[in-house]
Length: 235
Image (cartoon, rainbow, N blue to C red):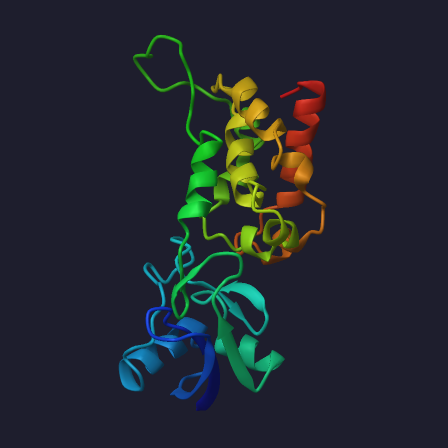
C-alpha cells in the first residue's frame, strides 16, 4: 500500500530554516516506520539523512518524533502510525542542534551521561572470580539496566528543554543503576553530583519520560528513589 509521509528536513550548511518534505512510500501494514524511511531514502530521495543501526530496538539510534511523540522507528509499526494519522509526520528529537534532517548532535547528552560516572566503582582488591550478587540484590536496580541511551526520555522532557543545566532523565537512570548496585562503592560521589543544580531535584515529575521510554522503564520512580537515597542515604 502507498503511505504519505511528511518529514522535517533541514541542512544548516545550505538552508536558513527547516521545511517539510512530502513523500510517498510503498509499505505493508506490518512494516516498521523505519522501513518507510528506508524506502524513501533508497527509492525516492537519497539525500534524506537519519540514523539507524540494529533495527531491533536495542541500539537506540532511530528515535524520532513520529506523529508528535518520541518513538523508536524500528519498533513502531506502520499500522500503529496510520491508526493515528493518514499522513505520517517525522521530526528530529527536540532539545539538540540539528546536524542534518533527522540527525541531531547528541554530544551534550552523552556528556551528561558521562558526568554521573556510569560504571562500577569498587576499590576492593580485584577478585579471582566475579563479584557475586544475589538475584534479590540485582532485582533492586534491574529496571534501569534496560536503558539503551536512545534519549527518548530526555528529549521528551519540558524541563530539559527549558533548563540546559538539567542532567536529564537518562543520566539519572544510569546513575540509579549503579547507586543501587550492591557491588558498587561510588554512591556518595554520584549523589553529590546529582545534588547540585541541574540534578534530581530539577525534575518536575511530568511523566513524559515514562511515556516516551521504548523499554518501559519507570523513569520517574527511579528519579524518586535517587532523591530518597539522597535525603535519607538509604541504598
